[in-house]
Length: 155
Image 1 (cartoon, rainbow, N blue to C red):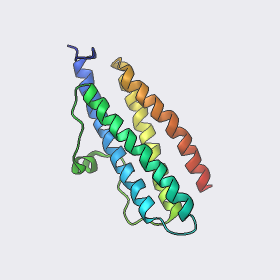
Image 2: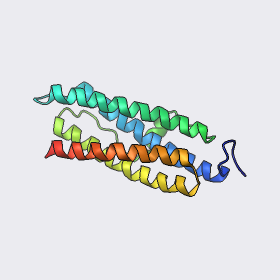
Image 3: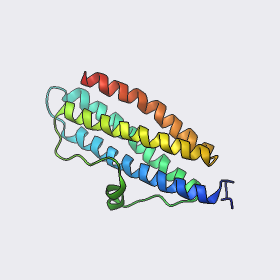
């Protein structure tokens, strides 16, 4: 049985579950980056304040793209923060004001996102879902470079 865009309905529903878990992790990563932008202190303030804003703006775009992809494959995106907290593979960060600590937390989060996206890429390929596979591939490529840069920043 196929959905309206010609994908196997059962495989699409499995992808919806995986994409909702990814969406949850993105929401937590977004809030962490936003918090770091607001609360960063110290010598790296000017540099990191701008970088964290760049990062959270990119994350917010991906949150919207993921929700729309879930809708496209006939699922319902999670939309309650309690759901995000319960299934996210990224933990929320509280009261972080130190630049290197904030960068390290974001680095760990992006590493987890890449791992999850690789898994979804394989799942999407198996489901012949080129749209989801392409999205994951684009995210992985972009975030691999960001991981390299964050690691370089930390030395």
